[in-house]
Length: 470
Image (tube, rainbow, N blue to C red; front, side, top):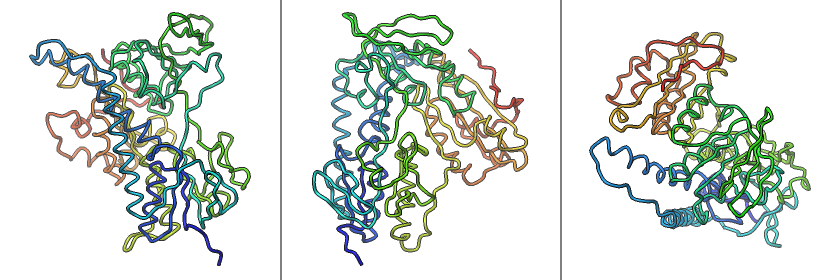
């Protein structure tokens, strides 16, 4: 039998790679992780964690303003951007250390540098070659910017946390969750935000009511929404960056800003990995093709997380990592072999207000089930009866009539992610509308609305079902 340096060599020290490495080591495997950047990957360094911290920061501005309705008087404090950046950097550094400790404490060898495949069992890092029985690619995704004139003047989401100086005038280009989150965050931090999107609605793939509702709520905060427009060119001038925009139906105008963020998508981070040379099959976008066990077209090479372009969510990568570990080294003692399900995966978008969603959209439900019933509520939360805020909350349930199972649950409102996480457990377990109805609500809360909806609305084949109030 051929001797290998390692049982498993992981390329990429993000959430999925680290989870796979340390859990494999706990099973007794000899494991190495190669990482060229800070440990923890996108989520820890330039994604979920810093973005949520900045979202918290941005909420304080609206909280200070709303406090006046509750009797608090005086001027709100001002944001010190440099302090926020320094505190965030310190926390991220702490998390980097935790990730390193998790690996070292389980005996994983950390190898610094960019890794490249040399054959089905060999990886080269900084000129040195290592062999492994199995190789796992977990290099995640990377932002992409289209070939627009002046693209050298734009930034991507990776750069947003350390901008210097703070952009008083920010343009965000894109309609996905990253674009929407940064538009909300920097508006809350005090920037004038222009949000440019080439389509009519934000957040493709989300429920139609959610898409329409969040656009209305974001506009209430003062975000200048420029939909159905595309960037033609970006030019640096004495007054800032001049962005030439053109409407899809012909009219054109220019906007001058300090910073242009392009959040128009991410692609698998595979350049320089040597996939083609060893025969790993990839899609046109570079996503690695894998089977149900995350095995690529080369049997000894596996891939998981964003590099496979399935569901690009950190918890999904963590779940996939455990499937790989069980596949390679067997399940933990007394445990069943892990399987990954992509049904009823909850997710949140940290716009202001937040979005939380799990299960089918109304349009998807119409295509999947013979008959559905839809329940919706659109209301002003109790807090805002005194706060003076015009913010409203949307909550929506979709029920399969044949089984009475709740197959879709959507919310736009404060702490939507926290609320939807709990309901996701019930939906994963197959909870019916009858069970929702028999559950006692916690009063007074926003969350209780999900268990007190009794009057269905007319469902219209995926069309918006709620008339939005103002």
